[in-house]
Length: 159
Image (cartoon, rainbow, N blue to C red; front, side, top):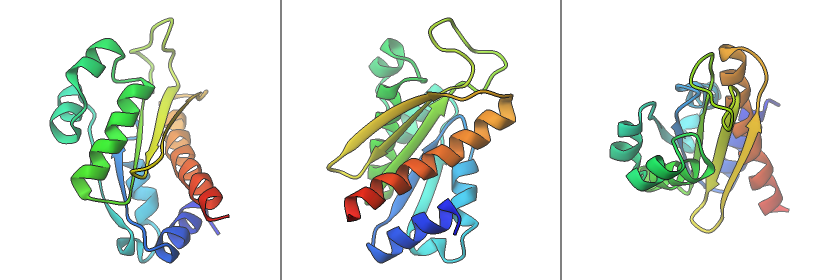
């Protein structure tokens, strides 16, 4: 069973809904989730908020957060996850933001730095990884990691 199928099974069995806010992955997470037949039972939708303006306007990310921490930060990822959960009125909101390269990096924020967030209305969690590879590899690995993170968190809640 693929991670997407396993995540879908847990969501369906728990009568839970999911929404996703994507930046770096450009829709890949939603694509992977909707590859599973019957995903409409639990997947409400996604917002691909690539620009800071879209993060603010569509997800409610604070301009202060963007100015102080940047779009590639745990703080931004957490606000994205909360924003998408609220917009779709889903049980769970996930988000991913990062730098796929080859440009846009700094000494503090290298190419491949990705932040992930989970929000279920009670627990909010953010984590980061530096993913090696080219732009396509970083984007695909980031999408896979977000799904794996959600699966791990939901599996641990059920046990």
